[in-house]
Amino acid sequence: MRFPKPKSLSFRLVVVIFLLIVSVQLLSIVISAVFLHQKHQEEVFRDLEEYANSFDKAFSPNVDSAYRVSIISLQGEVLFDNKIDIRTLDNHLEREEVQNLLQGKSHKSLRLSNTEHKENLYFTKFISPQSDFADSGIFGKFKNNHQQNKPQKVILRISKQKDSLYLKNFASLFATLLFFSAIASVILGVLLSRLITNPIKNINLSHPIKTNPYAELHIFMQQISKQKKKIKKQLKSIKQSKLQFDIITKNMNEGFLVLDSTGNITQSNAKALQILRLTPYNQHINIFALMSDFTRAIKESIDSSNQTFEISINEYFLQVICMPIFIKDKLKAIIILLFDKSLQKDIFELRKEFSSNVTHELKTPLSAILASSEMLCNGLVLDKDRDEFIARIYSESKRLLTLIDKILKISFLDSSLERSANCPQKERVNLPNLIANILPNLQNLAKDKNIKIDFEILGNHDSRIANRDLEKSQDFEVQKFEVLGIPALLEDMVYNLSENAIKYSPKGSEVVITLKSDENSTILSISDNGIGIAPSEQERVFERFYCIDKSRSKKLGGNGLGLAIVKRVAKIHNATITLNSELGKGSEFVITFAKMANL
Image (cartoon, rainbow, N blue to C red; front, top):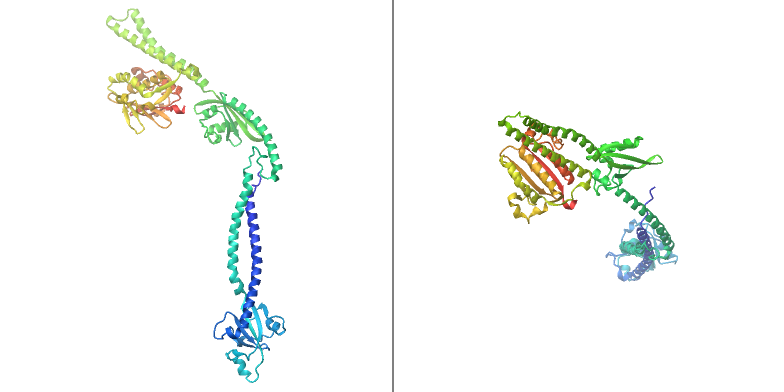
């Protein structure tokens, strides 16, 4: 069940403080605006009154005035207006400011102008047209129409628009104040929210009551403390159970996997990772996407009642027990046990094959020895042929001895693979020195065919060190080519591969032994320009007693055990061997050892 994500306390505090400050600021601005408006209105009325009182001195009809000046008769007729043509004006007797003055109520008025359609401030007073400014031209119309009967007084009206008084003066000020108050409220909100929330963030849940910053949170901290003690006990129990489980699975000789319902690996032991060729970095991948055959077998096992099956994975022959876990008829997990039956299968097949091949291979030289010996014993050999028969007995006996020696070596290697306790102790082996020790024997073997043996070491900068320069290179990268192994077996492996290269190479050709290194491995390769091996037979050359051309192998003294020994020596050293070959162009055997640091 998904719960809604809780809102941030800091954000809420910032919003509340922001709204509070902005609201107070807006209220203050409104009150200030009303107050300033009232004060300013009173000030304008005073200006209008002062202007009206000094009208005869301050006003000139030919000069543009900041105020609208109107002179109105007591009957409401507009006699003069400095802003509007009086011919367009109607009778002003019913105007509020005129009525207020005539009725003696007030000299000041505020109303919507019928002419300008805007709110205006008005100040009115009575003036006499007989005054000193009566000749200034203002009362021209009145003089022309009333030359003999001039009125004793008229109404002077001074006005100014309200918006021009207030909005233009204070709107920008209020907007500026509101803008800066909003910024200040955000900053203050952030600071205050941090001041409030930082103590909460700094609560140490290991000691919630001691580090509680606010009394209001005391009950909450007590609940946390109680829950923490309860969780601690549960975690201790879970940890002990998990430790016991990990110890059991870690020391199992069988692979152990736990998958979720979608095939993701949730738990595994080292043996399972080794079988599936996984590392701690990718051990939680989805196994259903890893290998299709294994996936298909698991799904079939889940769907059927048969929870055991056998399968080959990455050169392992496995017996697999698959146990699905259902809760309320819904698949929740899959427990898988992997039993490695590779050795048992290999041993069975090898023993079966071994009996057949040994019988055949031993029978041939023994038959030759027995026949030659029997002919010698029965005097059936001429004196001139005795040396030839004796040489044949010697040759076949030597071949038989070599064959027995290799059979014993194969048996020893099989025993070492099956029982690691039978394997000699491994040690640090310097491959350049090991190869240099067997080079003289190889060169003697290659001398009859005039085959050149070239030993090269590729350094970090692709520099080449020939075998003749090896002694001068002890302080160079030569000392980096060390592997963990058994010297005698490694010598046999290099000698067997080199011997085969010499045997199957034409006269005057070249055999190259190369050592190189990269970040994770040390690589030994032995290449020749011999007859090569067809792609269809490259997988079988490592089988015991397998010969591509039996007549040719017999002629060259081969018995089909050399490469079988090489493969087992590589396996004992956790090395991989690959063959690159093309008919008529030669072969290259590449052995890759893991770096000492990666073992």
